[in-house]
Length: 273
Ligand SMILES: O=c1ccn([C@@H]2O[C@H](COP(=O)(O)O)[C@@H](O)[C@H]2O)c(=O)[nH]1
Image 1: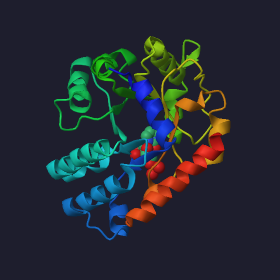
Image 2: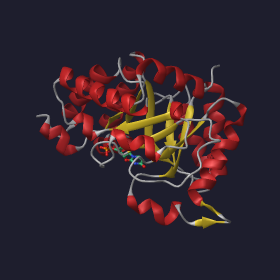
Image 3: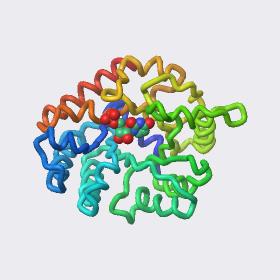
């Protein structure tokens, strides 16, 4: 089985470095003329699958926006995942799961095991119960060629209070990156990190050998031209900037939505070249 790292590299080489965030905010549904109800969510999903599935290297549905619709929301999320994967995109489920090992194993089954209707190519996880608590997710991801993206230095300003805290001479965020790099010495690139594009992160990412999800483009204020300086020390072939609202506000017209994604992706590619 090809590791997640090579799968990721092949996808971004073919389709470019921009992750399309699929975040059905209630106000976005309304601005698209859709109801904030299961039928509106379903239509939103169909439009996103059509607009992004065949052009984006990676799509990132934000699980939190599907959950308020209960079983109907999860059914729609299943369709988004399967539809985008069928169209050739890698799906990164932004679920930010984290718990003690036995519960983490259940999360891993939900997002990384073929038996689950939610199975995705990768999932975001929170390491703040200890990096070791993520082991069941790594064990599920590795043999399946799937990925686990660990929060290291998030795009929100509040993250600093935890992620910049000193932990024996390194920041907490740096220890997370170093733990991810240690796993990736096997060459499979199973572990990615989440590092916001919104500000200088102060991390040494040079040994990571895995993907770097960089949310914050667009609505949170980061611009394509900020990426080079913010990630100056990183291997830019692993960088995956992400934008949700910044692209989605061009909907609901499928052509306009896809054009908005392609324009943002081309801006990223030219800023990083
Ligand atoms: O550090 C992080 C981690 C995750 N996110 C998620 O990305 C999108 C950002 O949406 P925008 O509309 O482009 O602001 C959203 O789903 C967040 O939960 C993040 O922003 N920062």
